[in-house]
Length: 571
Image (cartoon, rainbow, N blue to C red; front, side, top):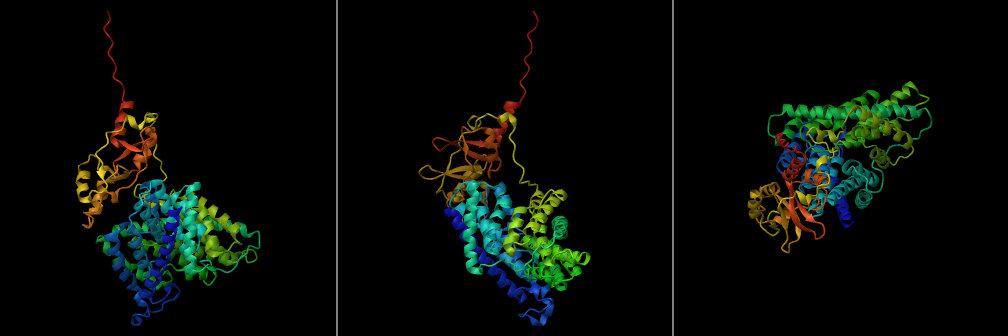
């Protein structure tokens, strides 16, 4: 509980700093608080360039954040949420601590320089990195580390959008992907703490300010349901455009990765030159669409342009989220649908803005396939409860359409393209059932003293058969395991030669000597190194070591056919 409160506080302060960075870089690079609402105005800092400054803003931003990301945290590139999902599902919640700083600067520069991306992906990754960093510093076990990562994600969403409930369900539905009472309680604590800090800085009011809408006619419900079906298809289309553009950028670019955002920024600048509404997140344009200030043709142009602008920003190596762009497209598409319904059935269709609000939630549900989060976040972002019934209907239908059209979501597809299926659960082979870990464990390798300098410990790690060794304190207390890979990455900068090896030790999931081997396989598969220590459950001391090789040996012994004994000759 104390750690959850600390993570929530850190996420709240991080959200304040991140929004300040975005505002600062936006004013510096565009001369306006939000250039998407300024039309073709000039930058006050370089008025002699006129509207042509938008060709240079993405390039200048890319020249700074491109090398920053390439040098210090490559996982800060892109929209961030898939990396957090992967860390929770496959890496025990471990995220490099420098990600929080690099992601903050890179995303703020990208958005401030015209990148057509959102704030939720970065703040989720920033908050998650803070939670992982705190858990790593205190050497918490992996199951608690995952909860702290989710606490950071929830806190970031809660403080940034003044949406504590949405932060909780975003973390549970998309990050943890599991609803347990303990984790839910901790995530709620972090979200509430972060939201209190965010409200003290930004005020206690809805993030968006749409007009008040009501559903006045029963015939509105079939229209809203049809909008949900179409919006689900739009969400899937956005996903496919995003990765198609990213693939095209990968094929076209042959230069160094650090220069990719700057060179690609020229293409983004050309798009902004013709359609400045794509500059940055674009919340003022979204609100104008919901308010009915645009004609149908321009609304449809905004839908297509936002999909292309966001995809191009991510494809050239930019850093930012896809949640806000999906809301933007949903608002424009929903408003266009509502305006069309008014032309075709003027006495039946409800207000255009109501369709815009429902389109926002439905497109996000179609892209992310997170219906609970979509319902809650739309209610909290707008403070509008009057359309909750048609909103729920449209979101459920959009989710169903998304599932019918695509196996993956906008987040999981990025991982599947790398060969990672976070929904796949390791299955234990039947021959290992009933076999205790003690029966197949190897002798315990000589443990490392936690105070041993990392440069000396690296030698022992390099010589170890599996590149993994246990680490103990001076009194024999088990601290965790250290891997050769982690040691090499830490020593690479030349500044940690004298650091103690205990600083890179992490606690993997415990494997008890008397546990069934089939139940220990999951812990072994998700382990960072090539083996895991075996603990005596009664005395909590190290008694052995289990590796993939020892498991395969046991499997071979239980499945290999026995040789056929020759019959004795007949007498």
